[in-house]
Amino acid sequence: MEPTAKSEITLQGIAASRGIAHGQVFLYLQSELEIPQYTVDPDKRSAEIARFEQALLVTRQQISQIQDLVTKNLGPEEALIFDAHQLVLEDQALIGETIRDFEKSGLNIETCFNAVAQRYIQAFAEIDDEYLRERAADIKDVAKRVLHVLLGQSALSLSDLVEKRIIVARDISPSEAASIDRSAALGIVTDAGSRTSHAVIVARSMKIPAVVGTTDLTTQVQNGDWVLVDGYEGCVIINPTEQTLLRYGKIQKAQESFESRLLALNELAAETLDGVTVPLRANIEKPDEVGLVRQYRASGVGLYRTEFLFLSAEKMPTEDQQYAAYKEIVAGLAPAPVTIRTLDVGGDKPLPGDPHLVGPETNPFLGFRAIRLCLEHPEMFKNQLRAILRASAHGTVELLYPMISGPEELDRANALLAEARAELAQRGQAFDPAMRVGAMIEIPSAALAGDLLAGKCDFFSIGTNDLIQYLFAIDRGNSRISHLYDPTHPVVLRVLKQILSAGHEHKLKVSVCGEMAGDALYAPLLLGLGVDELSMTPTLLPAVKYIIRAMKMSDARALAAEALRQTDPKKTATLVEAFYRERVKVD
Ligand code: PEP
Ligand code: MG
Image (cartoon, rainbow, N blue to C red):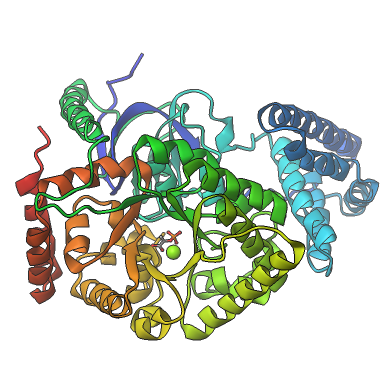
């Protein structure tokens, strides 16, 4: 039964993924374990050792269960990692040292085990050998499990969610987001995050209503509490009353009828009232999203974020593994173009399998990430370049470099691409010699260097998520400063205009693949500014197509011209909203 006696509380956050969800909370708190420290009475010491042995046994059983599940769902290859985890549990050095420490210090077994495990993790992490370094990650993972068992807490995982629930978390990492089961997640709420956090992008692609930036919802609810998630207005209602549910029922009905009107446009072209057709492409993260690209009739893929292939793997995928994934997408959509972006890790997308490749950084967003990392690891980068080139033989591929900061980086990346081409030619492997190469424009220095980059590539793709983050120096995942993230700010419009002018002067296509492109409110503004193509999460395509079909391109140009004259971002926002509301009616 749904309790309605408790009082209703509304928390305002940021609307992140459209839709309304009502359900019970699944509290996902990946807290740092707090390990109590105390002395064990001498007469209880043998019982303490027995408790440790029992915990090792329980952990072993837990890992076997997960191993069986992964073997069933993903195959035996993916489950191999758990063999390594079992070996950690049988490691006599680790166990023996813990017991010796315990006998010497008399401190509780959690404290001793944690200290020994940390020493091992540190020692393995410092070894200059990739295989041994991976052991540090194994020990870390297993130690956490053992400690959870010893402390009587269950180690939560998002893949544990099997019943239909609303996930409430402080934050969700990209790899955690990738493990969410659509059929079990009714909604997602995070205390941290912004509209462009990767968990949000995943939620949008799965059509899961989401609200972020709720600050402290995790402290206000418990597992099983009833909440309502309003992904349109960005609020969460704890213990909604019957009246609230009724009101939302009506909103949901109106939205659903609007959504079905949108879907009816699927077969129609994204053509303005004055006859301009706009290519709308899809942003994807996994090969299995090819179905969505087709379902929403995207004219191709404008951004394939390859990092998810790396984020979900325990090890670096090989050239052949990457080739297989890229080929599946390219051949599946041929002859439609597929823009494959090279590895964009670091910052908000740490590589879980190999944390040492990036290493700890004080400022990860300004750190050793994306193309910077790839240029310093040419063999790893060329593996990917060769895999992409090989996939280009099966359809139309465009290659895209992320986080280009200036012409030197583009030159270096292109030089490695030339080497990759030569290596394939020598091997006698096929690729498309005319594959087009583009640069993401998402760092202010690149935006200002458009003319210098234009001669070195075939197209620009503007990543507004990062571009706005770096223009205003605002961490895109930090909800406390997300109010500064303003796509209608005059600075954003001026910078966009400058990139477009530089690109068009050199006859380059300029597209936008940041979240701004998939927002039906901003799409007219972008098109009016001169953007040639928009790329977005497939599920957002119908709403963008709707506004395109309801507007004239000449009006969008007038809107952009007027917006460029504004000095007050609020006025621009009002203009943009009015443009939309005049053309789109929800109910
Ligand atoms: C962007 O920065 O706008 C972008 C599309 O890339 P990502 O969101 O993957 O950083
Ligand atoms: Mg980016």
